Length: 90
Image 1 (cartoon, rainbow, N blue to C red):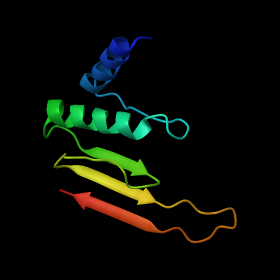
Image 2 (cartoon, rainbow, N blue to C red):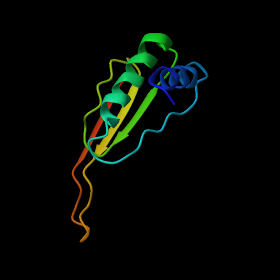
Image 3 (cartoon, rainbow, N blue to C red):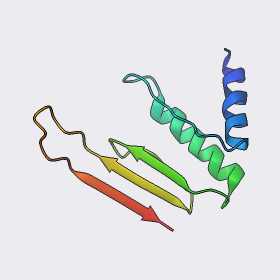
Image 4 (tube, one colour):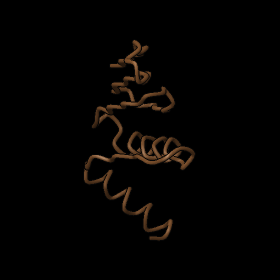
C-alpha cells in the first residue's frame, strides 16, 4: 500500500468515526503516526469527540478540548509498583 493510500484509509477511518489502534515495535514511528492521527481528528472533528489516550509513556500531543489520558509505567517481572499519571481535561 502506498503512502497516499494509507493516508486515505486513515482519513476515512477518522471520518467514519472508527477506532484506530496503532501498535508495533520500537522506533517504527508509532508516536509520530498517533500524533498525526490525533491532530487530524482535532482539526476535522472539532468538539464532536472525546479522545481517550492510553499509553505506557506520556508522549502524545493532543490539543483536543475534550480528552482523557492515562499513562502507566510498566511493572517489572517481579510486579514492582507502577507509577501512574492521569490527566483529565474537560
